[in-house]
Amino acid sequence: MLLRDVSGHRSVLDLLARALARDTLPPTLLFVGSDGVGKRRVALALAQAINCQSATPAKKGKGGQPLTACGTCESCQRIERGVHGDVLLVEPGDSGAIKVDQVRDVIDRASYRPFEGRRRVVIIDEADLLVPEAQNALLKTLEEPPGASVFVLVSSRPDVLLATVRSRCPRLRFGRLTAAEVTETLVRDHGYTEADARAAAASADGSIGRALGADSTSVAQAREVASRALQTATASADPKRRMECAKDLIAKNKKKGAPAADREALALRLRAMTSLLRDVGLVLSGGNDAGLANADLGSEVMKLADRYDGDRIVRAFSAVDRALGALTVRNASPKVVADWLVLQL
Image (cartoon, rainbow, N blue to C red):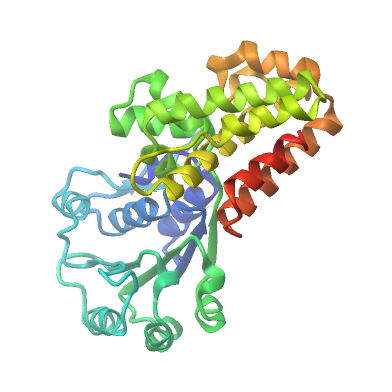
């Protein structure tokens, strides 16, 4: 994956490309943002751009990059396959953590001159899983990096890192991708049909990783249930009718591991509801229909827009966001979350 082929994150990519072209790239960087938005892919694309054997200035223009890797030279290909001697990827082991020995090993290797590339690039993925001893071992290297090395820390939870680590790394924030960008990536890189990609992207909350983790049948069902719950909530204020929606939202799974499956199923339906409410808000604000995440459900979105006003859509969106937080962060009961939510919509 080359910098020019990455979906979204244009401001971050332009900043990196300009720094490469001017030879002002910082020796340490911290990539932060939600899971699955492409931080690791950009780190590897950056390594290609640094070490490409035939990188040349590109023609500038709309969306153009000042510097790009070719993607075809031996260096680019070896980085793509994960076998380049000067691109070191550090990630959690079987224990779910990055141990101090892993860090000491890459620090030792980074102290030598690059073997086959221009600069050695050390990428620490899920850097928030560095154990404290490993973070402390990394401090001096981050403060005084070897002249021919670049360290890129990738994290979705940067606040878990020691303040001393964060202070030594300029931070680049990766926002969530749009549904259109997720759809484009799924079709181009993962062989999805346009219809399946749109359905997966609609409930992925801007995360390619989340879109890939959900099967198309589950996503389609989640959108159907979410739409039905919103339609019922706007059609009636009767608490009994609304509580029937709650039962629909938390349909029981009788398979092994059911509690976790029930929780994930409800989370998927709540994310689908969030996506639908965003689309309703876009319609109410007079936005372009081309920006709808659920364009294939346009008629249902329009029906919801007829029943919502600006204040109610804000309240509904806030309620779903609180419900999702209670479910995924505070580990609240799915039934309690669903019962509370349908009375707020």
